[in-house]
Image 1 (spheres, rainbow, N blue to C red):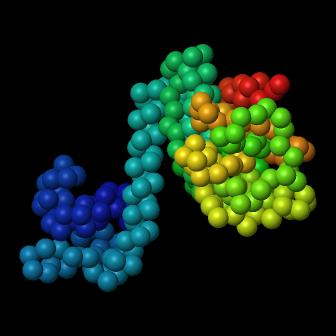
Image 2: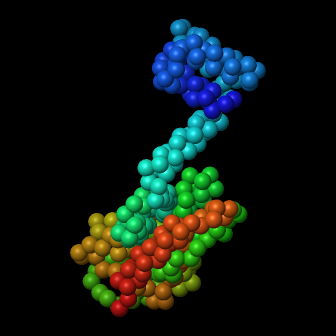
Image 3: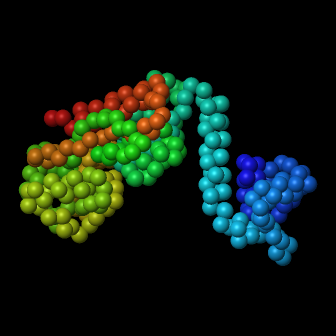
Amino acid sequence: MRLRHIELFEAIRATGSLSRAAQALHISQPAASKMLAHAEAQVGFRLFERVKGRLRATREADILAPDIARLSRDLESVRKLAANLRHHPRGHLRIGCAPSLGLGVVPRAAGISRSRQPDITFSLQTHHTGELIAGLLAREIDMAVTYEPPAHPGIARIDLDRSEMVYVSREPGGQAVPLASVRPDKLIAMDPRDPLGSLLQAALAEHGVSMSTALQVQTHYMACAMVEAGCGDAIVDAYSAHGISRPGLSIRRLDPPVHFQIGALVHADDPMSALHHGFVNCLRLACAEVAQALSP
């Protein structure tokens, strides 16, 4: 099937009518009828049958439908990318990041980038690491920014910063919190499937602290919001803590510190452009701002 056949197939499935599908594609009904016949001749079976005055997909067409829908989405993605290149010839970056980085570091980096080059445009989206890697491999995003980036075939990693976990509570104080003194009954835990959640769990276990807590959340920002609501204390990444910093919340370091890496991921087969290198530099500057805020 050709691309035009795919467009017609999707239009008929959406409208149930050859004439309305033709209108949606801005072609005549005879042209649509001829195109449908050509598509059916190519695949070797009927794609639609008339049921109670509407065109309904045949069983064979229903089997094809998921793959055709995926191709249709890919085609729309190509169109959007072409439009971005047409309207923004200086550059457009599609950035994916971990949810907590999408509320602090990445927007800050985009702001630094646009202050230097106002013609650069961005589309930003948040996902967990597995989804970010899938997006890179499918070339749905140009770069991913996440914590503890894993090694993965077809993906190249760029280290951005080494940061640390911090203790967030409503109790005033500036002294570091000893890991051995952390009370599980007061702690809002991170999902152990989260890269930093598993890292923290291992660090606490080394100091005899169990993670059998009453509350567990999926994102670092949610953990901070729970602290603000008086639900307990949390140990989160420094970026999230400073991004949601509020009066009445204290942010303290841990003793010993629990460090982690933040990195950018790109498709290994796609060469980095000057645009990519420039944004990596902006990410490092944004990370440095958080490190400066954390330093005594």
